[in-house]
Each structure stands twice: as structure tokens, then as C-alpha cells.
Amino acid sequence: DGFLRYAVDLCVFNSTDLKDIEYIYSTYYNKLEIARFSSSVGKYVGYTEYGVKQAEYWNKDPSELARRKNEKERYCKNNINIDYQAALTKS
Image (cartoon, rainbow, N blue to C red; front, side, top):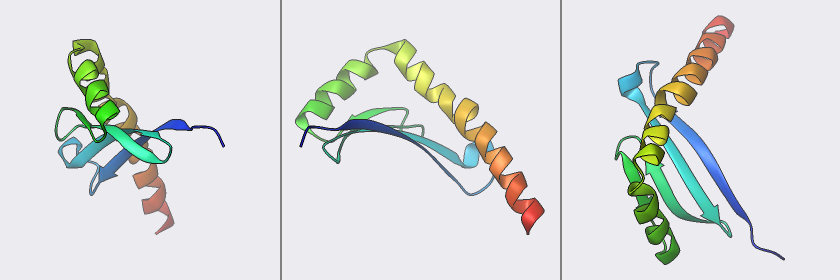
């Protein structure tokens, strides 16, 4: 019956080209999304009162924004290439 906080990294893509990939990092509290970073937007957006405050805090930190922006290439591009090749070899 406690509170649960968790985060989800997500890559949305329709090809392996970096321009066709969107990286999304969402934070949740009690199953409710409180804030999200999207590589398409380039900053955090809050969805609750607390999430708005967190987004403002994170958006003021250049190193945090740079870290999230880099995840598109580091996390998404790498994994999408692996998954894409695996799918092609099975089709």
C-alpha cells in the first residue's frame, strides 16, 4: 500500500536514421506520469504540480539536459540498430 516511483526510457522510431528516432524519459509516481523529457521537445515538461516543479529544476541544469539529449544516440540508436538487424534476419 506504499507509494511507487519509477522511470521509463522509451525509443519511438520508424527507421534507424537518427532523425526518425524520438527518445522519451518519463517519471511516474503512483502510476501517474509526473514529468517527461522528449528529444523532440528538448526539455522536460511537467504534468502535475510536483512534476512542473521538477521539470523547472531539471531544465535549469545544462548537464541534465545534455545527458538526456545524448540518450537518443547512446541508448536508442544503439539498441534500435541491434533490434532492427535481428528483425531483418528473421523475416
